[in-house]
Image (cartoon, rainbow over all chains, first blue to last red; front, side, top):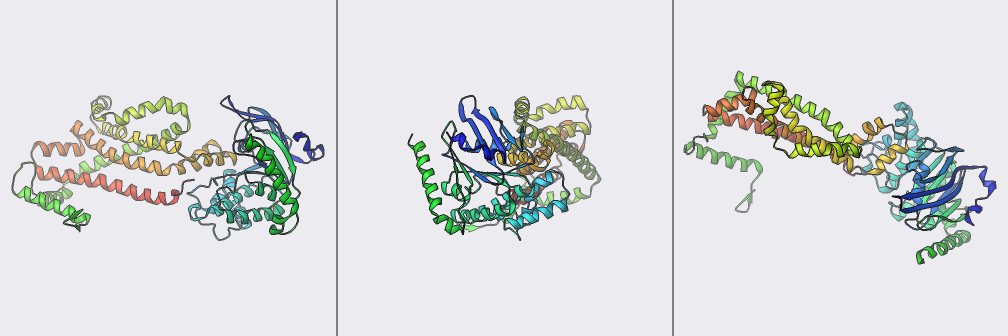
Length: 263
Length: 251
């Protein structure tokens, strides 16, 4: 029933299409089974599910870091065969180079593309400012807190000017207060950047708070169990967190996920 | 070191041994242990002697060349073995064999292949030093944070960029540790090689001194070699500490 919820009207403006995607590890463990999804352009879609539902696997397949066992992924209408410049990845453990400064880390995607140093540093500085790290350009990752490190990871992904940002539980290694602030900043950033975000999380609140669309995945083998449109409530972050629709959506998702835990 | 509950600094404990040596030497208990003061005099004389200069520069040249080749071969080999499982399976066995084998016994064969000259010494240094560099580099690559590699891949790194911009830097602490151990083994290689060839460099001097019972000179040379080996490995460890500073928080 769920697959149909991604209605045909949205298809026209979807940027990432996942078709009949399956992934089996070692020929035995079925991580994903026949996933069909569209990700609307300019929106944030969250993949949400219990641990081991294959949500990170799906994200890495979309990133081109993993090969699907069968099925296809289309980005901008083109079938992907590996990583590409229209997609950028934000890693759960930040994946920063400890030997490089914040500036070089943020500019690294551009460095790999062979952009001249002045040019790429200028772009990186802009995004370092955008994620709120001005003044830390010459710091090393070990001198930063977890939240700040992930901001560097985000700046690096933004700097390459990809259409789609793939974020793998980006806030899970960050403490709760920092996490909330980071989420609020993310919302503000999405207003400026107008990019498509695909977001993996196991936090229901985070999913509903940030997303336009929440995809619920069931446990192994991962299947799409439900797609929930989460219309973003207007107002300040604190108002959203007390909003009735927000709270109802969180409750609804919890009741659905609960079934998998009891199974 | 502590004596009667009093903490004695490293330098003083060294001094105690020197004094002990001097006493034993002055008592003329053993032929092979001359007084330490005699050795000091010999070191000063040796530092001015022409044959020492020749031997030292010859040995240093062999050592440097052997180490250079070890680094040029060892690091890329380790990177490749760490990255490509097939290469590891093919070569890993040999690296481990050469690492644990008593290499001194191979020197005569090296001598047959490369003659009694410097080439043999360079090859010996290489054989002593290269394997630990390869093994440490390889181990480093295997323990690299996998998301760092995924990061490179997702941002479109070519395989050359993957090695030159990510892998080698991530593995630098292990490479340096391998290099430090390799240097110590390299010094062994120079001396063992030259001793067995017995015709050139430090090996010739050591042979001449020990056969002629010039014990002051013999010990002077030995102390010089100890100081050289410890000194170079100390320099590398300084560098290591600097690198640890940057690579300290892995991941």
